[in-house]
Length: 268
Image 1 (tube, rainbow, N blue to C red):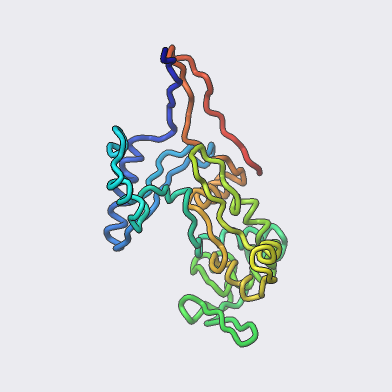
Image 2: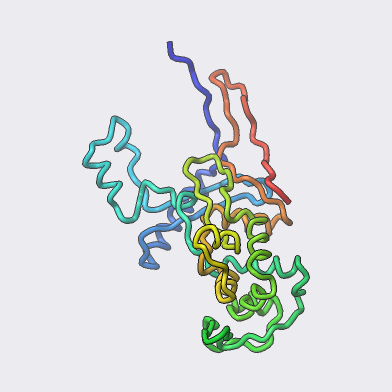
């Protein structure tokens, strides 16, 4: 005989989820993109309030057994609708990664909020130029100025002060380079470059220019959207990195709560 299973109550707020879907569809359309992710999270607990990955697919195709033709179309779609892009795919984080570079520099005592670094049209290492995004720079910049202009040459210099291994350690403190442990399948880890990682992966040391690139979220850096929002949630809540969770509670057939939600602290 069949035995009734437990029911799940999710952390998802249906109104927020609906707004998130509408907002992401609008943003994709306006920007001329083909895929995107939008996540909303409570930074005090790790509860996921909305999670949207587009493009998606029709669940009804699977309800009675999907045809080979329909399944092949989903698999062959270049936009990968069967992939949850929030946690099953990783991307270069770009300037969002400057969070790691700045707080690492502060924590290691390499800079203070008032330390002024000269931003320029480009920095030179050997014969290679590493350009500011506006090709001009802003002159002497403190931390607020560096973030306010998202200055590449400011964060190149902070990354150079830290070096790749200390930069990697602070990235790992924020949860980059490892699955968050969210209660969904198929999560990927992303990549946080370090001397050890490059030697093991490519048989080479990290070069100074690659340290610059890592400091602004380029080069070998790749992260998942769920890692990125989790890192910023930790910054917002004062330094507590929680495991993102979608299940609020598991309830038995008679209405008894089998397992309630509890915030799951990964580290401080």
